Image 1 (cartoon, rainbow, N blue to C red):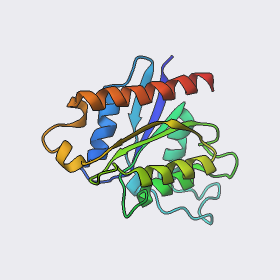
Image 2 (cartoon, rainbow, N blue to C red):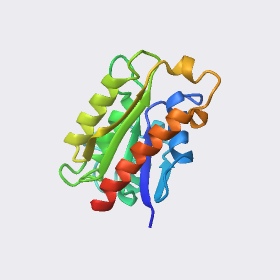
Image 3 (cartoon, rainbow, N blue to C red):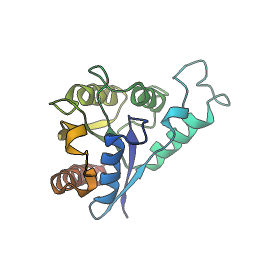
Image 4 (tube, one colour):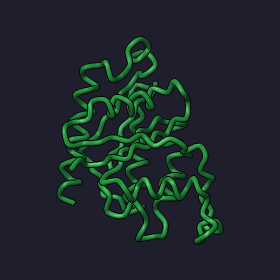
Length: 184
């Protein structure tokens, strides 16, 4: 049985290099790993506890929760916006963290990767995402990391799935995630 990895991408832009990185993960998944890239984060309203009541939860948030509950692990792919993760990723984490202590992220193995234009590849955003995931109850793999700098230049003419180094690194991150998910 394959380890099901739910992938959430923090950039909503059609030509996003982070979306392309998620596509590379789906393309270069190791044997025994099934990667699904969730679409629709832009349709989920900002978390509001007043709306998080049975019968009133927005359908888009219910869809996200159902996808996380069906997954064995989660992969966040984050760009860096103003030194932190995009609001859509934080919002997804907020919806998945509730009810507190029993949300869809509870004990779910999680990894954060990403690419950014700057020289550090978005490490600040990725660190913030790891922190939020951990507080939300996920089992964050601190050693499985991938930050790709200079994305606009590096991927100007090459899709990340066609970059041999990226393909190997993505596969290694997914394999680490699979190993923890299998033990979970």
